[in-house]
Amino acid sequence: MEPTEDIREKFGRFRVLVVGRANAGKTTLLHRVCNTTEKPEIFNSKGEKIDAAVVQSSLDRGYHEITNELVFGSNPGFVFHDSCGFEAGGENEFKMMKEFVLERASTTKLKERVHAIW
Ligand SMILES: Nc1nc2c(ncn2[C@@H]2O[C@H](COP(=O)(O)OP(=O)(O)OP(=O)(O)O)[C@@H](O)[C@H]2O)c(=O)[nH]1
Ligand SMILES: [Mg+2]
Image (tube, rainbow, N blue to C red; front, side, top):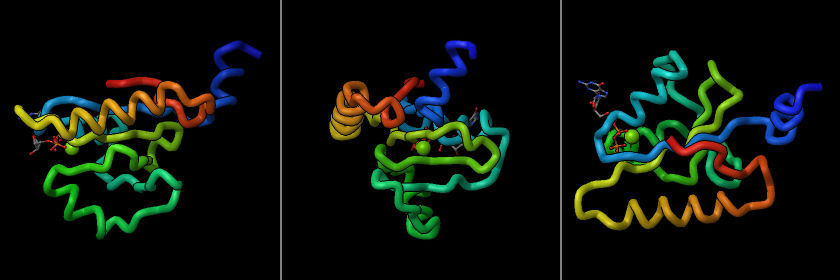
């Protein structure tokens, strides 16, 4: 077996964190790369599915829980963490992102690690 296939088997799904300025188009980009207009399935950090209606109102406001996992049916091999954009002068979003990255960069479980930051 090729080494890359070997490691893919270990982490199962590729985990990507998306960060950037508020309103930059991060969420739109996720839909584009997955080539879909469908709504992603959203799971909380415990892996429990979240009711789409509950998150919709918060999605409209551009607020996203960084620990939530977004999975598009068209691309089940990818898990996305869609972070809340950084507003000028808003330190809180940046702080939450930093904490999340620090935790997920050091976890020994390859499955839970953030594999790429976009
Ligand atoms: N003109 C133009 N508008 C875009 C583009 N990408 C996204 N938009 C629009 O920009 C707005 C913000 O897009 P989002 O994808 O919600 O941006 P976001 O980075 O997820 O925003 P936050 O989650 O609030 O930080 C929406 O109204 C999009 O329709 C683009 O490439 N060109
Ligand atoms: Mg967004």
